[in-house]
Length: 69
Image (tube, rainbow, N blue to C red):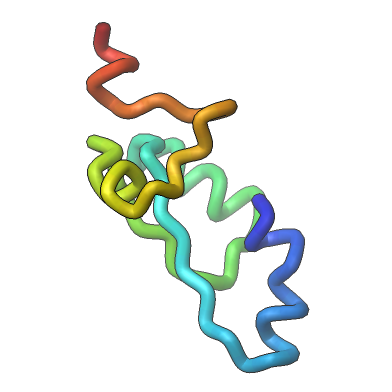
């Protein structure tokens, strides 16, 4: 949501934003439609990209393997 909330600032400086999520494709489609997201959101359902990028939001997210356990 932080990208969404600051989208106009990115546009001002001509910065192209992308995001990724561990959410399911169905949940992602619903979110994008509801919020009219104007930038690409990539799927990372296994959490690998977030883990190796060290950007996982520990307070809100878990990896897919943790969700299954």
